[in-house]
Length: 246
Image 1 (cartoon, rainbow, N blue to C red):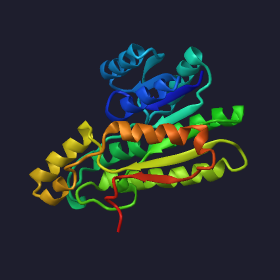
Image 2: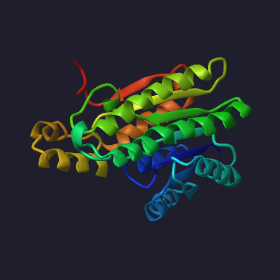
Image 3: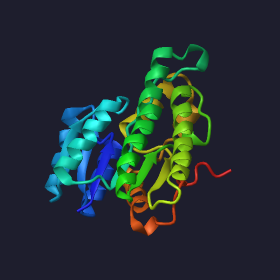
Image 4: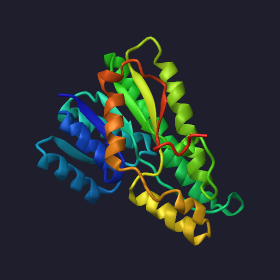
């Protein structure tokens, strides 16, 4: 049995990924800071006949990463697949009034969290000689968005970390890729929509009228993690129904 560790597994994209990978037979280490919601994800996986365990962790803390991986491996065995999905949107404000403390927290979760996931995950995968990682980035990795400086900066960095990590693993069978979803039908995108609308940016709200189902994102993640994508490495796959096509 393969083992998949998924951060941000309490709901939305993370829960959809957990259910999709469990359907393929993977044991799920569901990691999040929201214990109650993560327990719901575990129950959903178990209800489908899968195996799962909820693990509370703050992805911006190195010690939490070590403990989460130790717990997952003690329960299910080596982590073969890792999905760095945890992320927060932060404030909606122009840069000249963007709160510094919020900016720092967005970078701590969305960048440092991914860096630590790569650092700890790849160290263990390298020792075993195999593994696959998918970082959940965003179309905000390749474009700017008014009012979301912290989120956009972080998602640009996730794509850069992905490319560097893939090159660092050159000569191994370990792969690192990023998925860049457009607006996904989750709590986060609806929160951004509301803040944009309140700020009078109705054009941004209009662009989110048909968000992508989380299940579509999960399907692509499952492919990138699988042996079917053995030649896909260091890539930034866009899934946005064509919204970023020039």
